[in-house]
Image 1: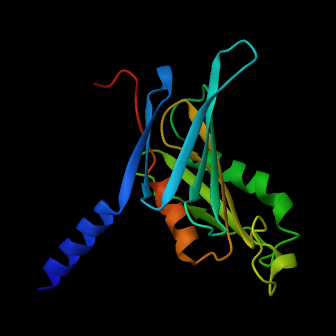
Image 2 (image 1 turned 90 degrees about the vertical axis):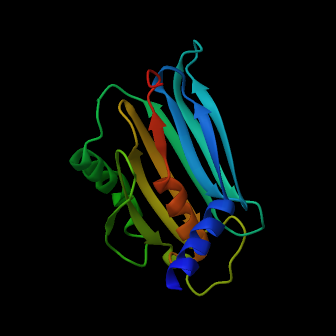
Length: 186
């Protein structure tokens, strides 16, 4: 009987989510899966000469929930994802967020990408603790990097009011769903 319940839960999850694909040109196709009540908007980013240099995404709930995810990819030439380099970069970049946070330290966490690697640190804004939620003022921020494929690096910013709330957890699942199919793959 339990197996039927698990199967129903899986079916409902699949039905309640959707996938979006974005053509990254010679860098392949990026796919993202999000809950049905979230939007994913993306656009290519070019240099002044029109050469593609990356892709920017804004991922938000369709409701008035105070949460959003910003994801920006840059095309790089460093090859395959490197766990230690990404971890060091995340720690270096998030150092400036420590002093204003409740945590007063960096707690490095891994994303669970199916391919590639990603990590982030989570911070609670000390100035907003105990205050009512206000649109655009986020009590919690996750800042990190992902490299779901070769020669691309993404900067991730997750904003919400509760780290263990359903919206922040939804954003983690969205980031963990990132997949890159190389341009030469059929």
